[in-house]
Image (cartoon, rainbow, N blue to C red):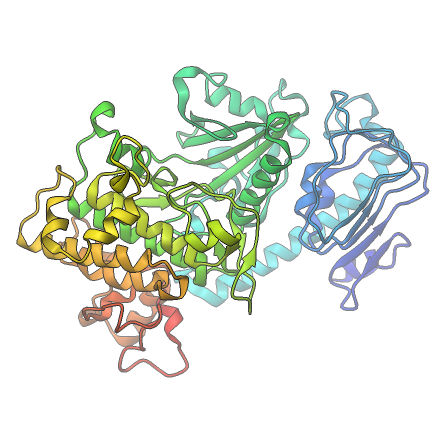
Length: 567
């Protein structure tokens, strides 16, 4: 603390009133030469950065666009080159006058590792930033120590472990303090933007990604999307990954914005049913996202392409379990994360499956924040036809209920084995939602129109009718008539629990046995199982009986704990 207070007395550093955070870095008009260090981004409380009127070269590191508190950055009157980074709307970015070559790419990136790396700017800025980063790391260590004391052996949640590959212990070679191990001699400029992000994500050199994908071999391709190709890759520690590779030049502003949006969202949310972002890479015009690998592909492949791919058809038990996993993941996005998010592109190809056939929601490039206190937010139309809620397609106004609608369409696809839109069918059947809602009133018709691969006994048919009813509620034309995702969790949870789990891990994820533990132990387990269903409290919920996603507190729990602790 004394060291930080001393730093705050430096002429070019301004701290806040508490003397705990650096808020302004003013290095203007000092005649510095060299490149802008990406390590500045580690000063997460920094609001103003003045680097104008120097002789700085190279590019503006893209990592600066992720600084959470940044309000102004001035790099005018320098000799910078390269792409103009896209800062959030609240950030004022001054790069004019001067910098006549900004917007062009002249080779070198931001690593400052060339002959000019030992310049005056490299020494002075490096020392300043190095000291400040050291203080930030010291504060982080103290914070982790305090939090460990606070939470004890139970920790926070198991979900936080997901996606920390790049900043975990050094045995995997990708520790946050082991950046040298990441950079190979041939990695060139790709190592210049490495820095740890919130939640454990980190940039990974392009050379590493080339190695783990056999130089992006055709044999490693998992799939293709609107903005690029997804490759399978295996890190040297055996961790399997899926790497989405996009070209910035072909993406345009829309693609670049979605790349940044995906990183921004996945560094803020962690849940067992949301795919984990392990890292990313910016290399020239290319943008790459590194995800955990889901070996069983996506739900669409298992519903519509299982014969061609050699899969066994999904059983009804598997389908209901997948639906519950998706409902829990989306419910977390809507109401249980630090912020409320709207996915906007929920569909089978964005629902990924593991070897245990448990599901995770993926593809967060179109995610929007749901503003507090507002019923809806107006945005450009995005998503996939067949899954777009009517009010969204008509007005562009989006609420969490557009995800509920898309979830209802996915349920219909799992029930019938048919796609949301199928031009090969007669006009009256090609739009799944319209056709399905017409037959919903007749249970016999539903039974006849089921996916032919399903083996439906009397118990299964009862479950199918419950899910069909839920699908109808979710796809109601008026958004206020649709339930929230918590209702879907409450409906699907009891259907899954009818089948005994096959492993202890599944048993723990589906509920808490309160008969075999004390009340405090039950509460601790309850708090650990963030994102699990509240259906463990029993009951057969219907939409008319369920007005919100939050059930009443179990009898006997202390009144100071509220029901959201059970999520």
